[in-house]
Length: 186
Ligand SMILES: [Ca+2]
Ligand SMILES: [Ca+2]
Image 1 (cartoon, rainbow, N blue to C red):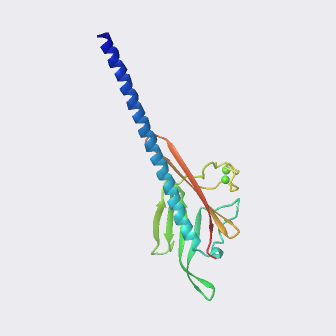
Image 2 (image 1 turned 60 degrees about the horizontal axis):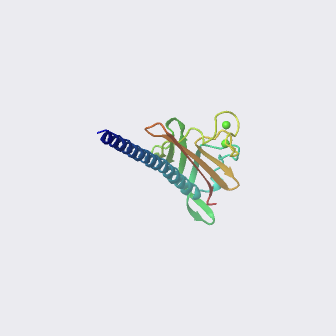
Image 3 (image 1 turned 30 degrees about the horizontal axis):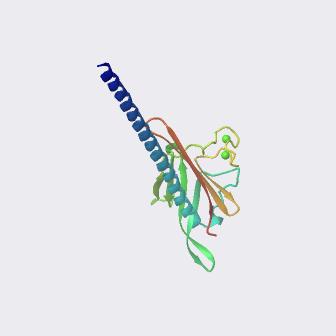
């Protein structure tokens, strides 16, 4: 009888351990999926930004500041054609960080009656990873107090930095940051 109880107890402990291991594996799997989805989202958004800015005439981006300055929105015009060496630009477009809604919004013909806007991503961090609102460059990237989407100019290139931040149902926070240096068309 005692042996049977011990055997049962051992089995129960064993089963309990297996259940715990399975649960832990499930958690790890879910969090890795959550994290990699957020990374994919950051990469896809960066690809879209890069594609837009690559087909832009650098001369038209005069408001983009050099380090340690930055802008969190960029107005540009896509080069539609080149005639006698002069770029013919198309409709104005804008990529902006909507801080209040933590989103990046792309706009075509901003401010016009037929403005078109598309949300490129949600979950944008208020500040870039490691940067704090206190004065100074907290994350040591040469840009001061940069937002979760930040553009800055360097020679004829634009550096784009992006941080996405999202909390899962268990309260675990995921942060994914990506940056890219983009060479404009002209
Ligand atoms: Ca910084
Ligand atoms: Ca700071």
